Length: 324
Image (cartoon, rainbow, N blue to C red; front, side, top):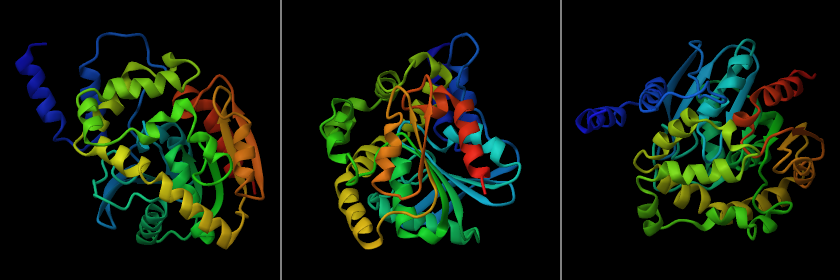
């Protein structure tokens, strides 16, 4: 492809806010390859997406289906797009709500407000706008942290919680995470760091996908390019590093206060870990925060459960949701 044509494509690409177009444009830049293992696919046509007003900005939210509500929260390295394999199953008999977290994906980029208790308040506001009183909560990575703030701060709004492969700031073994060599990125931020990453978002994300997976080939080129394009959007890396990550210290203090005030969570909790990541230890981790915890382990998976082993995850999650 000639440089002039590439430039035209890229200029058009960054103006487009539609997820399907993002995936299409990313695919057009790829060479021929073997069939995808974990391709990012558009949500079913039964979903619609909208920018919903929250404090100091908007959140991009996908909504579909009818019935009991399920709220799906992603983490770093993904956006709400990660939940498509689960959402297309749940939407048959549930109302499914899938936001991009604050400052991530197609949500707006406020300069502050990345503390997870603040993000939980925004989610309550979104649920109120949708006239939804309570949800089953499904979360991964940073989504777990926002999820705990929601479940602990507004326990009447969460009936069940499925939590995947990341600990909670200030609780359990969190202090060990701060000295874990694999989590050096918690303090990887600042203007010079952002200059280093600019234009190299794919390289940065490859580090996460390769180091934190059981088999890096399970996260295919289409998936990597899809998320690299989203994290290359203006403000995205800044809000991840100096927003979401930088708030962890305050999140730890907020979680300690929530726990001291409200005690352990009472709703049923399913703690899922990849066998090459947190594994069965996720149930122990959530046992510090909740009284009714079941555990599940995804085999042949690292941290990126929905990319590495989506069918295992879907089966386990839907089974837990369907229990009376």
